[in-house]
Structures are given as C-alpha cells and as structure tokens.
Image (cartoon, rainbow, N blue to C red; front, side, top):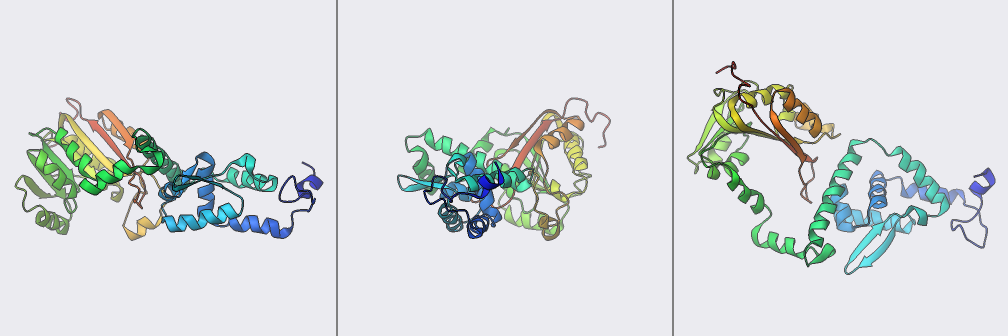
Length: 341
C-alpha cells in the first residue's frame, strides 16, 4: 500500500465523502485498545463467537465489567454483536473491520504471543467450549444450559467428583502429603481403610485433627515432605494437592512419595499450571509459579515411575486462580528395593 492510499479515505472504506482518517480517528481507535483486557477479549473473540458470560469465564472478570468492555469494543467497531434468544453473542471478524482498523489489529495481534496470561486464556477458552459442547449434547441446547444449573441447584457442584472416590480400593492405605487442614483427607477417608495425613506444620495438623475428629481412620503424622516418616512401600497411594509449588526441590518430595507407595500403587500430584502471577511469591510464599504438566510428567518418569499421565483439569467458571493439572504414576517392582525404611 502506498503512503497516499494508507491515509486516504474515510473510516468506511466505501464512503462517498472521501474524507481522510483524522488524528482523532486514530486516537479513538488506540483509546479503545488501551485496556489490556480488551486486547485479550479481542484475541479470543477472533477465535470464537462467545456470550458475555463465556467471555467473563475466559478473562476471569465480573460479567458487568465484561459487558462494559464489550460495549466499548462494539461502539468502536471492533466486534459484531448478534442476539440468540435472550443471549448476546460477540465476535471479531477481521474481514468486516474497516481497513484502518484491520491493519491496526494485525499489528497489535502480531505482538500478542507467548505470554502466560494468554496461555491461561486459551486454556479457559477450551474449557468454555467443552462446557458448551456438553450443553449442546443435551436437549436444553447451547445457550440455556438449564440442566446443569438445575442439577447444581438441587445437589450442589461437587457431588460427581465425590461419588467417583468410590472407585478407590476399600482396603487401601492412602498418604495425604502436605495435608494442610485436611480437606483431601476428609474426602478420602470414607472410601479407604486408612488415611495417613502428613504435614510439617503442627498448627496445620491441629486444624486437620479438629476438622476430622469424627473420622476414626485418619492418622496424623508430623514430618518433612522431603523425608517422609513412613516405611518404604507401606501405602497403596500417595496424594499431594497444591503443595509442591511451596518446595524448593519438589522432585525430592515426589521421589519420597514414590518410595512409600507399594509397587503398582499410585502417586498422584495436583498442582498449578505454570503462570505469571509473580505476586504469589511474596503473598503466599510460592517457590515455583506452577509447573508445565508435560515437564512434570517427565520429572516423574525420571524418578522411575511408570504409566505416567498428566492432564489439565477443567476450571470452575468462578475460579480466580491459575489452572490446575493432575499427574500420576506407578512405582514398578524393585524401584526402591534398596531404599530406606
């Protein structure tokens, strides 16, 4: 495009007035794009047409805030809006943008690569689309989603996951590594023979003990997670939920979990996906800003675990924190044949 073509014409490419884009026009476009969250919205809306609620889930903001930003984007000509029943759906269609806006967006979009916040947006977008697909498979349809809401209203949101704990072996002994106040142990205890709740913090163990006072199959043990006070191959499974990011050397703790689990048992870790929330180091004492699931799986394989799997967990729509993953593996026969007791 020549210099004269780049500056001629009205905002509307086919305008009969032939009026040039003014500095005010350019400033107006840049003003609309000055909010980083609007750039994130445009990026996902270029990929998919979404409702206000779906955009809110992706960018993790209140629907009222998202509606305000979408209104500004629509008024600025950046997104198209259409009604579907009672819902409003938004989409950025690049070919429908005015030429100057299309050129500006192409420049901005090219710079939006590689950030952890964008990776989290992509993960949450995939989760939103998966929820939509589930809704579409029901007769309630994509927008209404009435069945899930009705079921959640009647029975709560957590009953499915809790019921699936019935798949655990009734004779299992399970170690809850870094048990904290005992929320994982509380879920596990009704389904297994014994839960060994381990934490290095005495106040945490006291809180867990008070919480689980009605359960007679939970044993509380104080110990270092990098040197677990249990015998080799003494439990059927070891779980560690949202703990390893606090440790300088998480691989040592995973190695200890592998040591205490019997061959063929299960080592399960749940933790945060790698993110960019640097403030967590200072506000919550995090040593690691999450982990990449595939890298964590390699860590487990490097420790000798077999049948290793890692998967991103579906985020709750109202979750404000980083995404989570679960990684599991099984100690083979002889892995700790000469290990400590």
